[in-house]
Length: 322
Ligand code: FAD
Image (cartoon, rainbow, N blue to C red; front, side, top):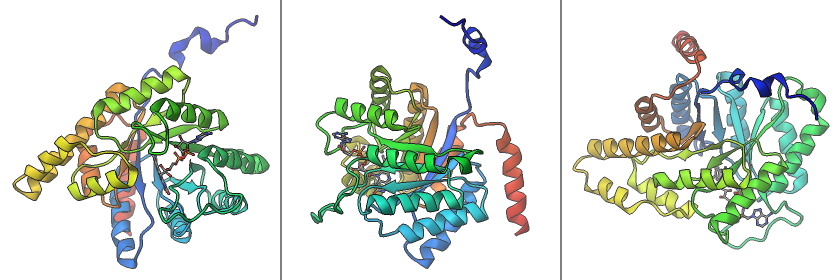
């Protein structure tokens, strides 16, 4: 048996409390007006110095060009690091390998590997398409391996989806955790969760995943609960049932301002509970709006890394000068 390494005998050499990661989700704009509003949001979010911003990808690949354009602009015109979502659905493996190569060429170093939702109109999958997110992770790792000499200053971080409540097609929550473990074994570095509404749902997922051997960070995806319409819509799209008590409290508010305050408070409580349960970061679903996300962030007062203050000042100075 070899003697223990220095790191093994000095556990305190690694930081005991790492800073909490902050990230936002954006989606590619669908019109010039939406693009203008999105860029206003991006400038506001940039001042908070997030660790990365994720850019969604239409499962059919329909918004591929606008997604790539947004990612390129983020890289060229901002200090933000993009995490590109990519889906198996709607693309052949050859097309996916090309897209991964193109993303790497533009400077992307983070990809969220997803299966994507199957079309609701029953359109059959593209023949030969990848079946599961796990297959996409393996494809990303293969493309990465071929380009390893180009990636000496930073390999690809591969993220995956995780589910605090059962995925609609899955037989059980246990199966979801087995799938998460399989994705980790295929090379996933981290996971971001689907939306959830109850404080115990994230803590339960974390403890089930850790017991099963999942060691990667599982970052809670937090949606600002300020719009009842959006909460209901996302519940329908994701198959996650919104909390009826939260909906009732939002509906009972006398004014929009009161509704907004209730929504922000409930979001902050959920995020705080996730942090208390051991979350290593917070991923805010922005819906391309900054106001609610920034209010939630302000009330959360996350322990961030120390470069934040200096970088924030530099970003603000650059924005004022332009
Ligand atoms: P998978 O992990 O492949 O799982 C899909 C289903 O197959 C599950 O029921 C799982 O249990 C089952 N399964 C997986 N592997 C196996 C296996 N080996 N054997 C048997 N069963 C298996 N969708 C988009 O279209 N675009 C986006 O940008 C997007 N972003 C998202 C971001 C986040 C953070 C999350 C949580 C979801 C996102 N989605 C997005 C939605 C996602 O595509 C759907 O939830 C989709 O239905 C499942 O994707 P997945 O990557 O979890 O798939």
